[in-house]
Image (cartoon, rainbow, N blue to C red):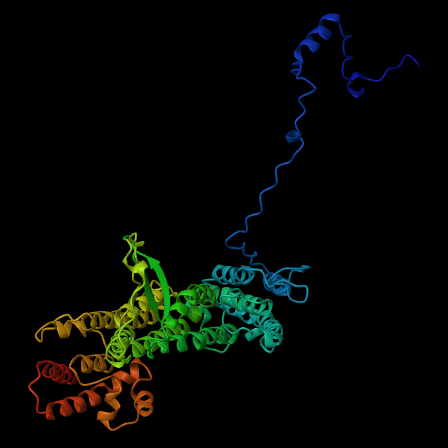
Length: 527
């Protein structure tokens, strides 16, 4: 029985035992290991222990859409709710220029992240109209919650007195205060989300059956306008009075800026106080407006602002009266002459004998001081400066189809200001204007009611204030009725031009300039 053995095919196969190591194999194994190069222990650099910072994760431009299976809508709803709940969570901070109640403004790109999530899912469902409508209906709840949260956070900011204190940036406070920074961050969040909606196909965002995204787009536009419009109006309320101040000119109101010419003669340039203020504030206003009007929905408000500012400049410069000549030098010379004449005639006693020191030889005195030259810029020079300063302000984007019309209107306003510069330069510098060609070229693109006061002063009919008197109107009534804007000036152009042409033709004069003005007015009525 003990002699029975297990068959060979039932016994487990065991691996053969390893051979004993020999001396040669041990030596070969030791020789196969590459010895580590030796280095001195004294050279221990700290750079070997520093770890390179890991690069920041790059956010994908377009989120990956979910798999459209049976639980797709449920998963999408949860994903949207989570994104909305995290979107408006502010970051905490202890201190900073934009910290309000221990919180920073909403970081940028958060609104764009939600917008890209929505647009990626809508584009992935193209071709399946039923699924697309189901996604849009699913968006109603999270977008309603988002709009409610935005309005809830924005309301205390807009009602705070600090939101409009100051209403416009100044040289002392060029940056936004914390309240304005938080409100503008909410507006930028809404603008980012709105830009993503604008990039969708119109058939997706349309509201044919009442289940589109039109209502949410209007709510976002309203949020942006509630923040940006008061800030733009604050700049406008400070800028327009400065520009209107260019119309009133006296020799005393000019500030003096001195500099020395190459020959050593000291010169002084008189600058209008409005020009001095504009040179300081215009770069600050341009920076603020560039941030306020970055949303596409604010491009029309930017165009309205620019047109109103340019119109105020055109009216002020065209209706500025002639600069009165400074009579200080002539008055001082006349007073000195009269005093000398009175000294000669008023005294009857003989003159006293001069002292002996008068007859001694004197050394030549030092060089007399150079006379101070006062340069008062004319209206044309101020118009060129105003044009350059207003050109610093941002303009609507010309490449976008939605803002192309607004850009064209702004360009027409600046063309009118450039035409005014050319006309003022020709009139103030005494350039001879020919009837056949020059007058038409100088007034091209310029409203008739703006060119009329300059041409009347050029032809010798008085200052611009004579126009309301010739029409039988009060100054305030004429300005409010005819000079309130480019559109109103175009409406009143024919009526005023015809009336002024009739008045000038009734004058029994053969003045060539007056005839040129009459011909210009009649030609504007015929066009």
